[in-house]
Image (cartoon, rainbow, N blue to C red; front, side, top):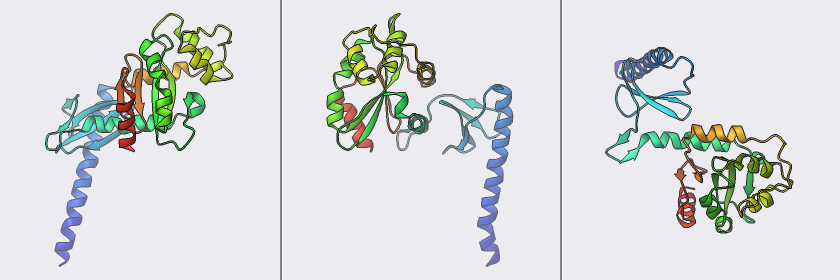
Length: 237
């Protein structure tokens, strides 16, 4: 009887020891390969002997002995799930949950908030202006829209963005900018989170605007029909 009870414990201890040894080996090897970066997490995958190693939004797959490294999407062929994107989705969700509304330009529904849409935007981007026209539809559906700065189109985009964030009424300033107003009557010399937003966008591989990230970390590029986005948000809540 004692032997039967002890066996599962021995198996668990062996597995723990194996995982701990693999973690140590991976940390040692990755410190040699990427010496200036700190690992955020090392997780076992469903593939025996292969571990997920994450640096921010960069994911690598490394063998337990630290000898082999793969970069790309890990797919579960049984379920067709993209396990890499599932991991990144959680990372993105945590990133945006940590950003306070006070750092953003926020449009909130009058009633209950059923979901959140984060949008990297540029005042000179025509598709961003098209998305802005959909704001009432999002609010009607109970979706809070949170704008982040990503001024990459037009020489004056960074200045216009700063003026929006420095305005007494950011929503009004954003509305004006979305119809072509340069906001030259607003002093844009206050401290703004523009550098932080740009760095975050680059970390998320945002290449253009608009870029949309839902509350649960789904990322979409370019203009999207609001009905489809709302369905993804409400359906994921």
